[in-house]
Image 1 (cartoon, rainbow, N blue to C red):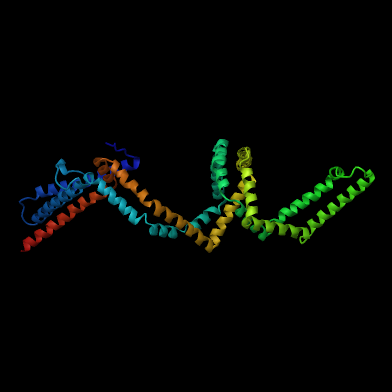
Image 2: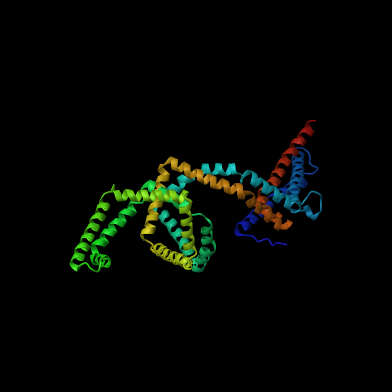
Length: 415
């Protein structure tokens, strides 16, 4: 049998219930005293006596009705009394169905979200820098904890046992070809080409001796040194001039040739069986390399260290940008009705999905909790919450009964 543990609010409810019981009982005793004092008296005392008698009847009837909900009146096993202890399981099931139907339905949840204007409230809250910084600080702590808790062994196991085998099974050449085609269509590769050309020109400028050694090693044995030096110098100058020309002209033929080459490669990766087979073979050689797992783990470890270091800087660039982004989002939510509508729509969809999928399971907490109580405990818990108000039924029954007794006595006298 479960033991009823009362919290401070429950103790306050019990005190209120006891006070109201005392009031209801006092009215009953008052009616009894008045009834005894006015017995066998003539004149107007008959009306008082009749009212007191009817008040006692009303008080006793309503006391019986209220008490019968929670226990057997006077301990007598009268049929259809102690309803809550005897039918608590059915009560819990009915309460669960009521909550599910009227509170955990998708339509009700969506209406509540729409009426709450979640997006506007979020916007008003985020524009305060203190609030946005609080969100960033809490998020940073959670992310840092997750990054630090993730062990290298777990990452290696995931890469070797889940990621790499999955990539081995998945054809990557069509995906790579489609991605390359998208990059070429958007011209996103031009920045990388410019960077390569700038670095190449810089390297050629600063490493003339290295270029001379590489080219000089290919010179014929019979050519004189002075001729080799002239040829090497000329080659170096022409290479510098060509790279600078390609770098400075966006429509250079070499750039167009590179674009054509990459475009053809993107198409071959998606549609040419021979190219696709070579790409998949290269993928398998890379994926099956013995050091692939450790290499990915090492890269992840370096990335994690950099992320943790950035997160730990309380006033660093990462956190500052995050705070600024949240503040900007708050202003946009306040000013942009379209954005608020989309935000509220997403919130309603999320809540609707949660209620639709898990609402019935959440409601089972009600019936399961009540089922775990024994009958007496269930009656006591429910009586603590509603018993005080039910005492007004006894009080009203006393008053109404007295008035009804006076009215009935008046009609009897008139007749």
